[in-house]
Length: 567
Image (tube, rainbow, N blue to C red; front, side, top):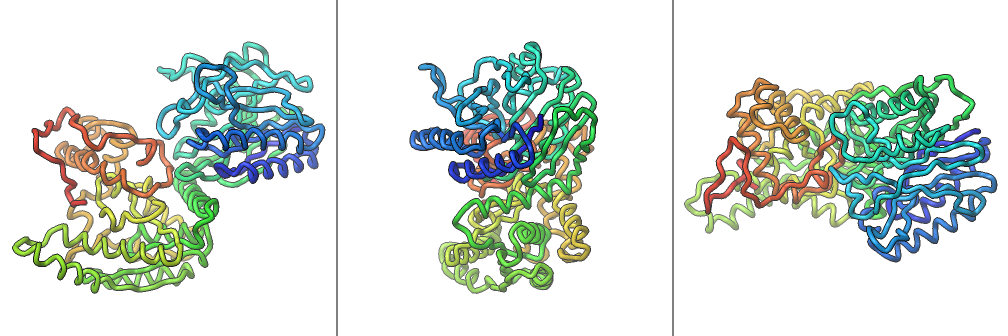
């Protein structure tokens, strides 16, 4: 039997558009001789549909669309489609995360997801009742172990702790299966594809049967899906597909010899492809933005963001504005201009001195007798932010925020200034990886798209004379490992100091900065998630709280926490 693997890029909430894509790919499957076509989890609604699932009209339209799709599918083709289903029980959540096997206008089989992930960015317990234990689907002489995404993730025998009591894969195998089929909406994070493939390989080796894995590709708001679909057998990959793009694969069940190539995970190329896909889908899946806009400072973050945006959308849809102040270096303008010329984007220079002078004059009576401090520095950042938002409003451009994860973590950013924007492209990329990505962009292009000066000059916000990032922060070679261990691994002071060799007092100071700036991150633009712990919906900490780490005293009544560089 030939099975078509349909790695599609659905749009959240676009029921008619997603159904049309499923129909078109199903027709292709028939043309190429397939008997069965497999699509990703919740592909009819797009994943994740979030609180659209609370809207009765959306659910009724989803049911009607599924019925219409079943009637329109090519005769004689079995099609596996993911969609929500009403829970027939009067108790529990109102929906089931379902997979339907459609054939000749009818639902031949239904399978419901048992394990509902409720951690990090996942919140399926909010919407879905766990399905009963799956039963093998007998179809055209094959015993199919059909299951949904998370249902295969509890199978790692070597794990010291299992999140769920049930293991749907083992339960299916005990019934006897010829073939496992897993339909997924598994988002990308660095290291995740290799981990996922290791789970699949373990299942195939343990049970001695192939596994067809079909994953969503594309981006829906913060989440980026890499695809990575394929077929694995007990000896290795039988069929593998492209990542970060829509892909159609055809596998014959008679084929048992390995001919697929295991995906090789390379951190920086993967980060690059994920971010480009994230920008492209954020903009093109939304009907609101004709172009994207960003401030160009001559620094590495804005340069990389602009280069990624051009790759995602084309140079004709990217606008850069440089906004020098009294403290900007000459390279702030010249490096920005060189970048814009190398990318071929629209470019404008708008000095902010008149706006800063106006605010300074307006505030002078109230600020009389007060020495200049971070307030005056932030006025410059807010003048830039207001300028960019004005252009965004006037022309309907999406403003891209350029701050990286290192800055976001410690609050080295200005609310209502450089934090303005609709999408934070690099908010989950540490500064050292920003440099690596920038060099990779130049290597791929075979030329210096990002100016060498942007890559080599010391990072600076240029908000006071001679300012450098290292005036307030340790070198990024020291800072980033500390932040990675605290934010992504949840380690504390002693563990981090021992692992990194950093001074314990420095580690404590950095961790304090992270904790004190939760209020800023809560107001930040949505960011593209590319690690297992991004700032955003997958990381939820209270802003107002009294719990402190063991090494930090609890503040007494009336004492407040203040971000070191202000808000």
